[in-house]
Length: 360
Ligand code: UDP
Image (cartoon, rainbow, N blue to C red; front, side):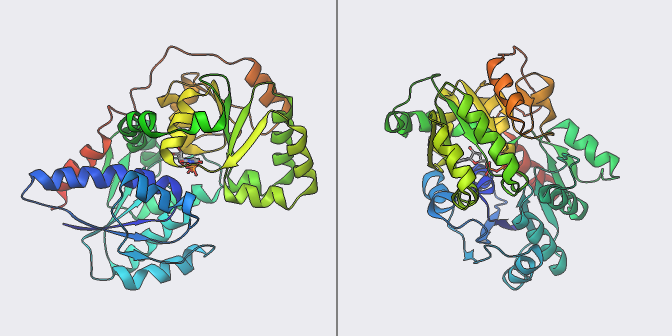
């Protein structure tokens, strides 16, 4: 079976790492090997947003590396088509970025069936490009690997029931697989001069946050009122926006406990997450990773796709209001409840087993 994996953004590299590893494990034991070829769209291109993940997580090198940074989905689709036409039995895409939908549209144009990993998630916020990307990708997919039963229910409501499988979450696989390695190799705590549970970790990168100076200003004002050190590995988009605004720069200067660092590698991120007393984020993946490490999470959005994290109390949605963020930090709780939905760390193996059983 020939699969072309199309990826282009940070969270996809991490998910692809664990699935590529599962493919290699499968190939080592099976007479029905999977030939995986990776196409990198170039959506993320900075070293620490892209290549660092290939180096650190030993993701197979992309056979094709396009330069689609800043492209529209249509431009990206058109760039992908000539590389994949006639070359694969399946195209595999992850999550909800422009690379996801562009890969799915390119596959559709070439008549290649689509495998969507992390299918069925919905925030029901139609202002988010991610919501459009994931819904349109799901509509076109032959295999829909859903991390949760809620995702399956979301698909059912849209009339999609065929090819849908609950597999658990490949990001949990990645966290479980790489955490020991991270603890052994990462020196980020020492480098940052911080100690276990004596700091908070923050990430901000969603377009709906960074495109609105008011929202960013409210978040930074909250950080200025937090009396515990806040480590913020800064996404290049957020950095660009802050650097363009005198108002935001002055709020950063006021936030004396805020420590801004460059965005970090995955192993460093796992260590920063695991040792944080609390995580504040607008990221989808980081919300879950907080739970994987059993660290309370405050999500600076009004809705989440990962509803199990809020239902169990591990995650609180506070939007970008300064008071709500500060209050949430003052009222952190450590729930007892666990989430079984995300599986047992073998979601990627399940995906490969299902493909081999049904797709050969
Ligand atoms: N991440 C990372 N370094 C960072 C920030 C995040 O390796 O400096 C990882 C994080 O651990 C998670 C993934 O990137 O696995 C989340 O990606 P992101 O927040 O960019 O996207 P989202 O999950 O919101 O789609």
